[in-house]
Image (cartoon, rainbow, N blue to C red; front, side, top):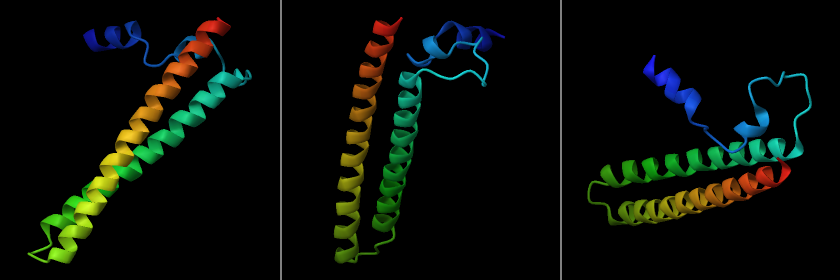
Length: 107
C-alpha cells in the first residue's frame, strides 16, 4: 500500500504531465509526446544492445583461457560497450531535459 502511494506521488517522466490519467487511447497525442516516446524507445533499445555487448565482452574475457588474442578482442568490445552506454545515457539526459523544457513551454 505504501509503494502504490509513492508511485502516484512521484512523476516518472516529464511526459507524464501531458499524458495524464484522463486521456483515452483514442484521443490524438501531442507531437512532443510522440517524439519523446520514440526517443525513449530508441535509446532504451540502444542501451540494451550496449549492455549485451558489455556482458558478451566479459564472457569472452572470462573464457579466454590465456589466449591473448581473445583477451584483446574482449577488451576492445568492453571499451566500446562502455563508451556506447555513456553516449546513450548522455543522449537520454539531454533529450529528457529538452523535452521537459518543451513541455513546460507548452503548458
